[in-house]
Image 1 (cartoon, rainbow, N blue to C red):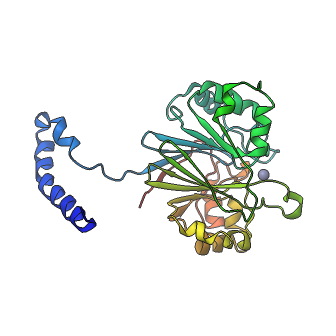
Image 2: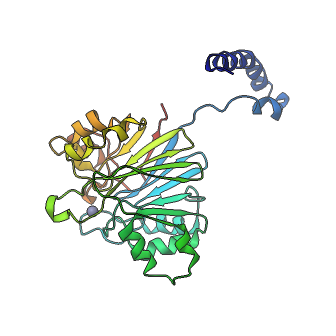
Length: 295
Ligand SMILES: [Zn+2]
């Protein structure tokens, strides 16, 4: 069937079914499951649940991914994930049930700690982990050689400028590039990964770790950014402050929406003031949520 025919056919089906649906809704007891199943599912929105620092759960229907969720160090400046949320993650209490994958941006103590990560992997036997080689090595150092958990870990050895690496996990497309960690030469050895993750071919989010707001590093990956629309990006908040940071978002990454992360704990309870001052949306309080539009 040609694309045009498909569109006409879908439009016809919708036209024919709309009055039927309206009728069914007004006579609820008359709705048959068969009639409901015949209607194409509408595009749904996703949800982002903020844990702390750069820890975020992204959910679209039953597909769920976590970023930078298990860490033990706030360096006196950043919030830790509340204990109640850590307990819910380990227990798999909704919305933290059935998480498909955990992504780690880099192996710094305010993004990743091996022990709590391993504890969660043990408690959630179906989940996968993708992260920099350094984080995976730290996990492997804690387990026996034949521990089946090692089969669930994907170690990436990307460097800035390398072609994107692609990983598929069930209904999730993962595309990763390395962008230098903020802080200049002092941080040059840190492998910082920027994850673009697409859930069910419908919702694409971008998690940037501690990326430096360096135009050149992002411009060098322009064809990668242009390959897909990012619906929602989670840049570290300094992209709203640093010279050129907002331009990188506007000119190179072009997400439909952004919510800044890695906001100092001082912003907790003062989100509106911080959002106004930085001129952008921010996650400031563990427990914050955002609707992620697929439009
Ligand atoms: Zn870092």
